[in-house]
Structure formats: C-alpha cells, structure tokens
Length: 586
Image (cartoon, rainbow, N blue to C red):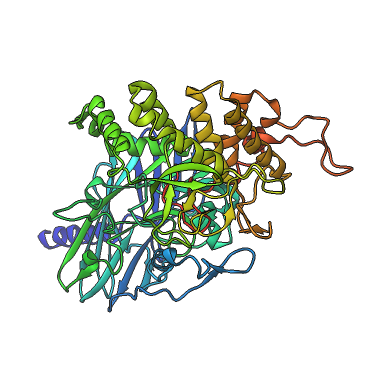
C-alpha cells in the first residue's frame, strides 16, 4: 500500500511538471496582454487597451526580443551614401562643417546595421507574482531575463526590467522587445521627440533624417544629444499611442565631471525595430559605446516602460515629461541667482561698450553702418564679417534707459545697417535681403554660405527686425515702406502650394535646394506684416485672383500654408542655412 501511494504521488508530480502553462496574462483595469507558448517560444497574442467603455486591440502583437552583438568594436566610418530627391550627393561637398556630423549619422551603428542581430522569442516563461511575469532565454552570447509588471501609479504603463549576463567578451546592445508591429497603413503619427514627427513614411533618407520631413523608412538609431524627450512613439488610426520611455537613470549626464559630456551616448532611440517594423524601441547600451564593452561573466540591467494610451502623441509626451521625468519638480527646484535688473544692466554694459560688443562702424552706399564682429564661419570672410541680432532688445534697452551711448552711438548706425541690408534696386530681388553678414573688406552683404537670397532671411532680418523697431517707432514711414517691400517680395514669390524656395542664386536668380520646401516665411514674416500694416493680402490672396487660366482660386499668404501645408510638410529648422540639419523639433 505504501509503495502504491508513493507511486501515485510521484505520478501526480510528474504530471503537474509536464503541464507547463501554455498561456500567461498581464491584466489590469486598463490593459490586457496575453502570451502564448508556441513552438518558437513565448509570443504576445493579444494586446487590448480600455478606451471608454470598450476594449481596442493593438494590431500585430509580437514580444520578439533582439540582442545585438559584435566581437570587435563597430567601425565609426560610414559605409553608405545618400542623395537628395533631385539626385545630388547629400550633403554637397561645399558644406564642410556638416560632413562630420552627417558621417556620424550614417555610420553602421546609427543606421542600425552594425553587429550581429539575434532575434528570438523567450523559451521559458512563468508568473512569479500577481501580474508579474518572467521570461528567460539562453543564447550562445548570454542569458537574458526579462521581467514585466505594471506600474501601480500609472495603469497604462508596463515596466520592463531586462538583465543580460554575457558568456563571451564583446560589444552588446540589448533592445527592448517589440511589443507590437504597427502597419504603415495604420500609422497616424510617429515621433522621436526632438528629431522628427510625421504621419507618413518618407522614402528619401535625407529629407526624413536631416530635415524631419516625414517618418524615416530606415530603422535609424537616434542619439540623446538632440532628443527633447527620451520617448519614441507611434500613434495608430485606431486611436492608440504606443510609447517607449527610457528610465531617467539611464540618461547621460551632460556635465558628468569636469568637462562637457553632452555628446555621450547611453541610449539609442528609434521608432522602428531592427527589422524596420514600426515599433518604438530603445537600445541600451549603444553598440560600440563604452558601456557596451563587456567581458564574459559581466551583466547589464536596465528598466524601461511601455506606455499604451488612448490619447494622442502629445499626451504621451506630457506623460513622459511630467510623470516620469518629473519636469515640474525639476523646475521648482531651480533658483535664479541673478536678478532681471542685473541681467539688463549687463546687457546694457555689453551693448554700450564698443570693446565688449565688438562694435564696428563702416561706410556703405553713403551711410555709416554699425554692427558687431562675427567670427564664425562665413563663406568669403577674412575675419571681417559683421552682423546684428536682437534689434528689439536694442531698441527696448535704449527706450528704457534713454542712454545716449545707445541712442546716439549705436541705434542710428544699426538702423542704417538695416536699411542697406535690404535690396532696393529694381529687379527680381527688390525688397529681399542682400545677406545677414556684411564683409567690411570686400564691402558686400552675403549669407553664411555665399551670395544667395533666402526667404527666411527676409523674414528674420527684414520683417521681424523692422517689426520690432516699429514697436518703438510706430510713425517711422521709411521703416513701414521697407516692411511692405519685404512682404511684397515674399507674397510675389510664394508658390501655388503655399511654400517658398529655400534660396535663390544672387547672381542668376536660379532657385536652389529644390529638394526641400520652405514654409517658415508665413508666421515669421507675413503674419508680422499683416499685424502691422493691416493688409489682408498677407493672410490670404483675394478670392477673385486665380492661378493660370483654368485653376480655381487658391488662398495665399500665411493662411494657405497653415491650413494646406503644415499638416503634411514640417517646417525647416529656424535660422538654419539649407544644409544645416535640424537640432531640435517640438
């Protein structure tokens, strides 16, 4: 009898051991995730999000893991080249300042082609606590353990902690698993905040990566240095937003010790996984960066969070910024050590002292013009470039202090500089800007990259500067005439689709940079002209005016670009010459 009992008990244990769970669930009042143990490992089969009183499924659930490995340090030199939509090399050799940063942007690590990519579904899975799951996978390179759990404070967030213990020396980067792969047809919005945002896939890499015009088709890995929020995201047409938010502890310190460490790269951000599927992904550490070099037996651990919300992209970013990164708390901790009065006094001292402000007075076209020395790179400069910025601040300071050092020694010459900076000769360029910079030795105005005319330069250095001066000199008739001349030139050269050329060749009037559109002249220029001059044409073209003989009337001015273009065509970075890439986007 005793033997029979032992036999039955042992049999029960063996049967229970053999009945490995085939389904694992992670569920709360807002989210439901279901894993199933298939022949290839644990796959996520269902992801549902509570939206109002209904549950909405996220398409193409996955759960696939990706581990990047390289025995040797990945090379930093690029092995790819790209062209603009007009077929030209991008960027052109003329733009020598951009070559280094572009090379960094298209090296194998940035393009997500470096190293060996191991894709797998975890073979082992178990529930280790209520609503806490653990998955394990052993590969030739190491042992991965991934634990999933809800954040009790935010029911739409899933915390993921991954630990990789490596078996061999080399460089490692552990990606976050692909929660779901969103189809392009279901794409409503995608963003790596600070780099790009858009609602369509842009096949041209230069347009998407350098200018943020559309969503990159390649699974590029973005750096932290220009990211405004470490939370790549994708919103669907079914009303869901999937964001991947890096834990604050992973962020690089921009000033770790005694030098600038802004360019350290701890976390890679991408809107796609290694297979180029739309699935927000984090990479930690970044392959080839110092933290990625591991010896056999060493381990890396990091936590990230998936946010599955029913709000739009902006709600997801607000959640990351305020709830996860505690932006409001950080702002509350900051204390100003300098009063506003002190700052204004220092501005006054800087501006009124010709030595500190590097003030120069030159003669041009019968006028004495004044401007500050500019020692940055300007094509054709022989350390003789001059320019002015912040005209509104100059006039405000002079108006507030009534200091003759400003009203007599600075403002009249700065005003003359503004007058001769604008082209007044008859012809195609009448009303436009001769250039931001005056070269004292060669006695001509130029832009940063040569003798070109840019609509955005007209807006900044004619419309905005003159508009700011008119706030303090509202009855200055010559300034109003110059403002109108600039507005008329912009209106005359606005294209039928609401955009402008990025630039024209000053010598032959040919349009340059036909691979990109420019919309910036709307709110930086024509809106200013409308508010000061009250001419309704600067907001929209009269309905009776037509383009061609048969086309229906189209609005122009600022309104047309607002309603017809900005939704699908992001603006270029402000104050950037054509081949300077975006450094931030909202």
